[in-house]
Image (cartoon, rainbow, N blue to C red):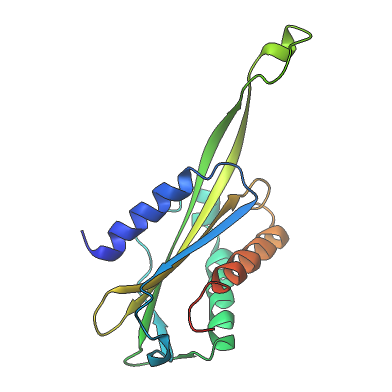
Length: 177
């Protein structure tokens, strides 16, 4: 299994256990790498993995908005898109999963209904953004965001806001800035 795929599995597994937080972000990268050597990027081939939600798979707006938000952040960091021989190849993976959270009984029960555990179902979304050194084909930095997506997928305005916030927060962790 290539290193970047192994890291993706680890990151997605870790994000699974974050529960119902509004949005969490994280990153991983080799601190020994000097990011000043990278100035150009290009997009890698599309992810072959499905998102897990047909509403997102069939939504061209999502891909356009996400890639546009990433390109905006890269431009702000001084990166330019290269038509040939980029320094970095950018890959991403998006996933939507239905989750179930069970809330236990807390405190003293005053009625029989108070003593019943409650369950809530929600959509959990994960974005993983990989930067691969084009010369070595190794992941040099990974950023991710995970959060609740209830009511977001079917609402273009909310989806736009969510994408922009996730990408902005991921790039707050990007090295060299």
